[in-house]
Length: 94
Image (cartoon, rainbow, N blue to C red; front, side):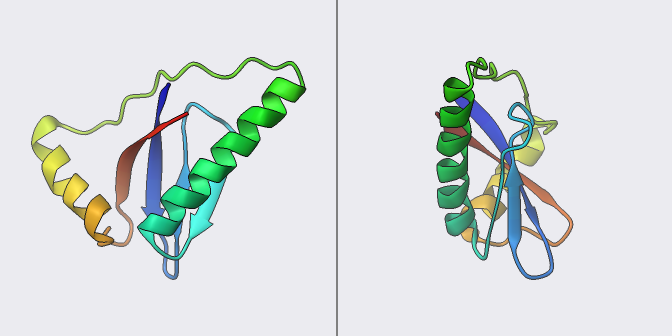
């Protein structure tokens, strides 16, 4: 399954969350680190849901990005250059 993850830049780090997976968040100093940390957090979160007998959420969220903006925003996502206060949307597979 593919979940969209929102990566936000703060003053000193990045944070990430998936709108379809409430309560699952991660932080990191770089975008590469945040992607790795969020992957670990998502796996841990899903293991806890399965252990507790709670169904894994179905991915439904679609980022609010116009197709013309996607190329520009994805450039930020891959170059570690998300402007402060802007969001970056990346798919994560679980």
